[in-house]
Image (cartoon, rainbow, N blue to C red; front, top):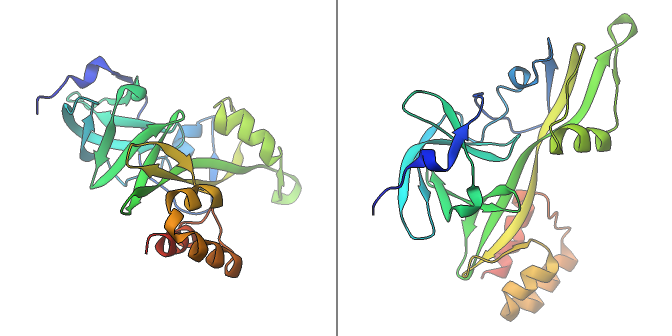
Amino acid sequence: MKSFTLTLIFSVLAFTPLLAQSTTRVTVEDNNIEYALKDHLYRFPSFTNGKVFLPNGRFNTAKLNLNMLYDQMQFIDDKKDTLTILSPEQLHHVEIDGKTFIYHNEGFLEVIENYETVSLAVSRKLKIADRQQEGAYGSKSSTASISNIGSAFTDKLRYNPSVYEDLLVNISEEFYLIDEEWKISPLNKKNVLRAFPERKNEISTFLKENRTNFKKESSVKELMKIAAQ
């Protein structure tokens, strides 16, 4: 396949590395939010060789990583600058370290399991669970509600602390089904039954007997194992 020029669809974005898995406390100093989150931003520990595919099958290779705060695919160019995809909706998919990523609803989904007729995918995003300022005698107190943080910082990226603060951060996950025509739907009971109509009774029985958590990967995979038998 012929390759296309990445720089036609990429633009420069500031560089910051790495990934976190569970709720973690980080300290913001001197208004430097990205430095405070430097160990929690990325899906992979480092930028890794991957491929960026267009719908016509053409692709190019680069060192790639997914920034989970901005939900953007980034790569490092020959000048060691970190770039981000400018028009991700024009891509077919991205492959990094054996993982497939698909652009959907202004973010990227990672395919985590393939079944006979559908694939299971997840959207992973770095979220701010709480922000705390130091009070009397060194105690910490929350300065904003979780909902306010979500709208003011996580979604809109409009957060500019003027003092030393602690942030509690974690990775939120939302799961999706991708059918053979690459149509994407949220993972829920209705869509699982629709994807596996011949397993309707088994799926319904499993859901009645088990407390499936549609926000937890291990729980979701247990359901999908029953559905895809």
